[in-house]
Length: 76
Image (cartoon, rainbow, N blue to C red; front, top):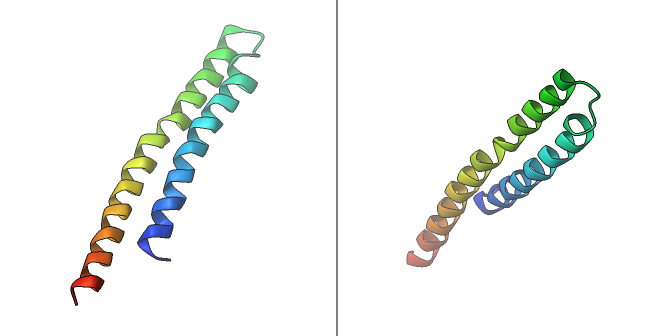
């Protein structure tokens, strides 16, 4: 798998993390009957949502690597 495909995959994973976080919060955090259940759902949703910046940073790094590989091909 080349750097461009990895970058695209990580970008999709970042957006999926955001959507997953919202879905987890809505299904577990917002619907709990007691405070402890709501708090657990909210914490788990936040935990999943915190993955998104990592995925986006990694996608940016792989995108830069793909651009550098493209420049090297054109320079030779």
